[in-house]
Amino acid sequence: MLCFRDWFGDASLYVLDVPLACCALESQTAAEGRPVAQPPADEKLAVVLSGTLTRAVAPAVKELLHGLPTRPVVLAFGACTATGGPYWDSYAAVHGAAELGVAVDHYIAGCPPPPGALTRALEEVRRG
Ligand code: SF4
Image 1 (cartoon, rainbow, N blue to C red):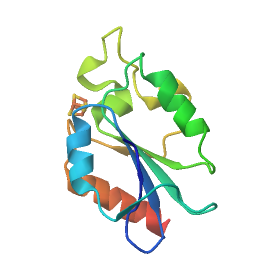
Image 2: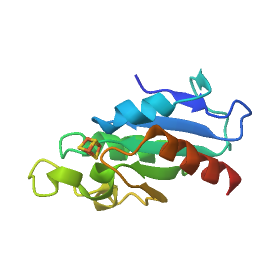
Image 3: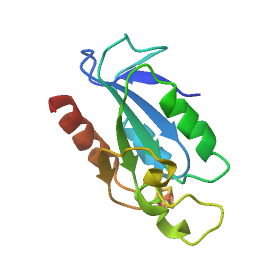
Image 4: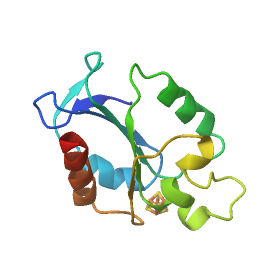
């Protein structure tokens, strides 16, 4: 189930991790803060796309992003969400979130990246 988190526990950044494949094991290990059903309006929001974007799931991810109340900061966590990763030549994989027309603000390299890389990126988003 998808849930937002008050990641740093001080309402400075709400994060929605979208677990798509194996990278999600790492991003969910990094998860901090209290789960919340819905972040307050106008608060800073980040969406973490973690894992392989398949052509089957891509429309739902796009709809999810467009349905959010504010334009989120989007993080592509791992090689798959950046470029398609090891599935770059698969007919079933989208070659990165940008191919969906999603503006990606942060790319986090790795297959998979370590959880700490997500923590550092979210600290940067919070500061920015
Ligand atoms: S980047 Fe690697 S670890 Fe992450 S979802 Fe793709 S194959 Fe799995």
